[in-house]
Image (cartoon, rainbow, N blue to C red; front, side):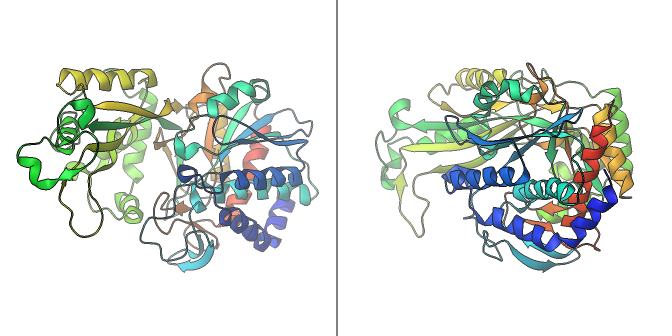
Length: 473
C-alpha cells in the first residue's frame, strides 16, 4: 500500500470527512433513554455497505442491535474493529453549544474543534476509522487487512447484551487475528496515552423501601412532620452505604474486596517508573476541572491508585422530593446507583455476592441489590506483544511523545474477546485528541497545527496502524 498516496487523499478530502463525522453525531443514539438508537444503527449499516462490505447487517439482541460488517479483500490478516454507536444523554447542564448540532468552534490552544455529545466517546473516532478505510480504497490502494466490524449500541449500558451477539456470531469473530478499538489517544499537550488494558465493571442499584424494610412509609411519601415517629428509608440507605467504606469514602472496607487484587508485575513496575518521569498531573486535572487528588496525593502514589486501584463508586443517589422549592416528606423509597471497577485478578462473579454478604452481616438485609448490568472483566495486553509493538511503532512514526499505561481507569468489554472461546489480543489506539466524555462541551480536535493532531492525523494513524498490523508475523 502506498501510504503517502492515502495521506494525500485524506488531506484533500478532509472537509468531506468532517461532514461525515457531523452526520453521524447529529443522529441521536442515546441508549440510556432509548432515543434514536435503531436509526443510528441503520445509518451505520448503510455506511458499511458503501464502504464495500460484502456483508452489512443488524444483528438483533434482547436489547439494541449490533451493526456487523465483513470486508474480505483476500489479505493474510483479519482485524475486527470493535466500536460503539451509543452515547450518554444530552440533558446535563453547562453546554455552550447545542449538544447534537456538531458545531465547529474555536477552542484554545487547539484551533477548531467539533463540540457535541458523542464527539470523542466515540462517534468521532468511529467515523474517523471508517473515513480512513474509505480513503485507502478511494486513493486506489488495497486494504492491507480483511476487516470485520462489530459496532454495538449498549456500551453505555454496560454491553449487557453483547454476549448474545458474540454467541450468535462466534464463527465470524473467530476469523479475526486481532481486535482494534479506534480511539484518540493524545492528551491536550499532544502526548500519546498508550493504554494497554481496561478495568472491568459491575453496575447495580441499591434500594431501600419501607414495605420491604418493615419500617417507614410503605407505598408513598408522607408528611415530613411524621419523622418524629416514622423511620426514613433515605437515612437507612445512607447508613448502609456508609458501612461500605472508611468515613472519607476512599477505601472499601467490605470483607474480601481487595483479596484477589494482583500484585503489580515487574513489567508494570517498570512502566510506572517511566510514567513517574513524564506524567503531568496538571494536564490531567485541567480538562476535568478538578483541583486536587485524594489525600492531596501526587506522583507515583496517585498513578498506582489510578491504574491499579479497584473502586466502589456512588454514581447517583435520590429519594423523596428533589424538585424546586420546598416539600417536606418522609420518602418511602431511596435508591443509589453504584459501580465497582475491577482490576487484575478480580472476578465479576464475586462482586454481587460480596455486596450481599456485607449488607447482611452489617444488619442491612432489607437493602435490595438490583443488577443493572451483567458486567464484564478486566483485560490487558503485555507491552511486549507484537500487536502492542506495532502500535508503538506507528506512534513513533508521527513523532509524538508516548506514555504507556498498563490500564485505563475506565471500562470496555474487551475481556469478552480476550477470554474463551476467542482469546484475541486487542489494542486501543489512534492519534488525535478529544475530551470531556460524559460531560458538557465534549469535543474532538479538528484542526492541525496545535499541540495535538486533528482529524486528518487521527485518520492517517489508523491507516498506518492497519498497514503495520498486516505485517505482524
